[in-house]
Length: 170
Image (tube, rainbow, N blue to C red; front, side):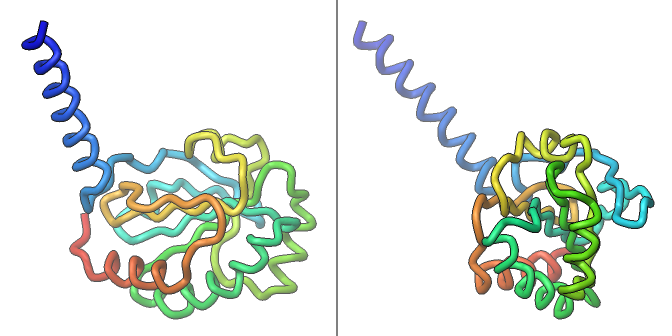
């Protein structure tokens, strides 16, 4: 009986170690979902078309206070790192009226890409996003290396983006 308990504990420890290693590895554990999004102007964008550069994906809503507080930081990140390859993709939640999203984009002079999740498909593809803001960062290899529900830490995000830009591509 003691040997069986020891084997079970050892197996569990090894499994936990492997999972922790995969989760904490630089390449991340999850591959970004293959989704196609509708942009504000009606054009389509496949997330896989952006692969090869770091991508910050944020799920947001115009009525979300935390989302509104993040917008200036996202604009700063975009202006600072877009010339070096960063893409920012803001996905408006399905309940946010497109006209309201467009007005918000114009008022705040948002330079990064905004997509509409009209059927809640993108939120489901990213694991059932329900709360805003929710942020994902995808590395050049197309793997999710960061996920956060709630407002992100600006300095930590800046450091992460800088690190991902410096990494070799695909």
